[in-house]
Image (cartoon, rainbow, N blue to C red; front, side):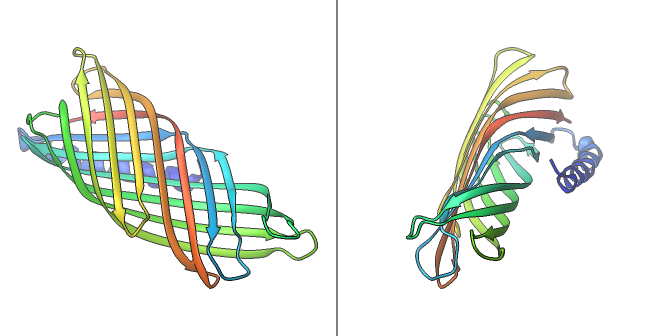
Length: 252
């Protein structure tokens, strides 16, 4: 993971841990702060529906790298609020063959910065974190892409694009406790609006050391697709992320 991602995640975690500690005196109010390390396989595909001079290819970026995530939640009885933050910065070099005569092979360096911020309300029918809970809120996604394209017989060209989309988010999650130590959880959600649709799936196995601290080991898959106007046509960008994660869960 690059230094900016570590700095942002550590600073946000420290701020939110301080906030949760100060709010612990609220009695029945439950606080949860969970920084995560995620190590996904990352792919960036891009295609264009028209215009000229752009890059239209799949697999512009395909790499495994680390991402920093943090989740903060406050709940009381049946209702709660949840905030999730993800930051990823990754780069890759690839050779891409354009599917148009004369089918040139281009050298492409792709840089991607991805930020995802989620704010959602939580409804807990049982009044506890166990069982099925429902989520509804907003997901904000920001991407910053830089493509350096080197043709076989020409100078390197630079293509840049930054996009921000905001979606409505709907989802559900389930937590089952086997005993005071072990639990199993899952989450599925879908967001829509500015994007063409975003899926998010998470499954974890948790071990609780005490009432304050636990760890979660699991797997997460996320898929994002959005359209933008570029190079005289509509450009579709698809980002896929899948891989294991390790979470450090603090409850107050």
